[in-house]
Structures are given as structure tokens and as C-alpha cells.
Image (cartoon, rainbow, N blue to C red; front, side, top):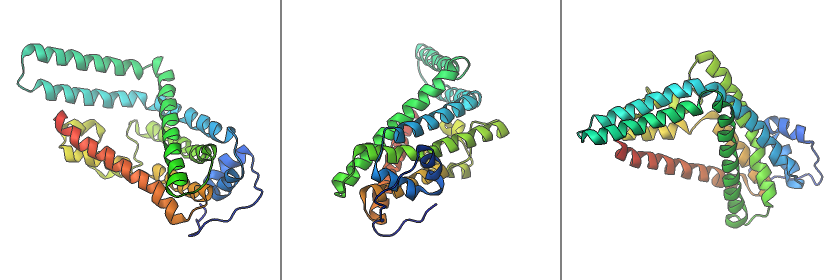
Length: 271
């Protein structure tokens, strides 16, 4: 991966790369790709990476489905046991029993054929589109408004979309690991060092759930994408490396604080 300069990067006045070159070079020569984006962008630069990521993300969801269903059953059964053990009227217990049974039935329908085949892609599409749009808006605001840079929204959209090739690579890794381990838990984050996993969260203290939420978001593929975002941000907005890091990783740290804090607070209500 190309090393970023500490100052504002230099630009080639004319930089032309084919879409295929961009999709491949985003891994080995991201600086060249983003320089080409800074020189000019089309809708293909953000649509095609989205499609590639969608294809592999949906496939990973399908492969994980049987094992994800087992985890879902464990979580729901733990939740049901927790609430039913409380001292409450029999009618209320029966209502809770029906609610959890209904939730389990819905999960089984989503994660078993034939529904799993299209549900995995719908879920992946919604997640990818929302995350790309949200990040593009935040980075566009951070570069143009906060730092006083100048870039079009379409360039920022391409800057966020092209690194989604890493999402495709992560999905391939997930597919391979699920086949090898027969488990929905794929170790890519710091949560792998914890002595418990997602299926055990309901039996844990709220600080342990919050710790799991925090560490599960610090994974190698996320850091890879953030690094590419930083390189792209520096080039697209013509700012220093320090400013690019401050914006990209600043947003990410804020997200970690929000999600971890929310888990800690709401875990108290769940027991």
C-alpha cells in the first residue's frame, strides 16, 4: 500500500485509468486510483464497486445463514429464559413466550431456503447503500465545510465506494472460514480475544456486552477500508495527511463511542 506524504499530495494533471484498473489497483496503488478520481469521475466509479461488494456480501450471508440461525436461537432462548425466570403473572409469561417464539419463527424463515437467497442480498444491499451514503455525506461535510476543501459529492461517493472492494475480500474470507470452521463466528476483530462470543451475550454483565461491541468493530478489514478512505480524502480534498486522519478516524472513534455507550446503557434495561 502506498505511503502517504505528510503534506498535500501532488497531482498529475491528466490521469486516466480504466474502471477495471481502478478496481484492481485500489488494493496495490490506491494513491493512483484516487488521483484519477480527483481528475474526473463517472457514475461507474461508485456503482460498479457497490455491485461487486453486493455480490460477495450476499453470498457470504447465504453461506453463514445456517450457523447464524443457531446463534439466533441461542440468543432468543437466553432472552426468553431471563424474562420467564422473573416473578411475573402467568399471563404475562405466556405473552412473552409467544413473542419470542414468533421472533424465532421469523428468523427461521429469513435464514432458511428459499427466503434466505434473496433476503441475504436485500440485507446486504440496504446495508451497503446506507453506509456508503452516510459516509459520503459525512466526509463531504468534513472536507468541504470543516476543512474548507473543495470537491464534488460524486467524487466523494466514488472515494467511499471503491474501497468497498475490501468488503468483497472480507466476504470471500468469511465464506472460506465458515466452510472450514462450520461456525458463524469469523475471527477478524479484537473480539476474538474475549472468552465469550455473541451467543453468550445475554448471560454477561453490561460492561462485558459493551466491551464486545467495542472490540468487534475493531477489525482488520475495517482498518483497511479506513486507511483507504484516508488516502482518498487527502487526495480528493487536497489536505495534509494529519487532517485526513483526523476526519476519517475522528468519525470512526465517535461511532465507536456511540455504539459502545448505547450497548452499555440499554444492556441495563435488558437485564
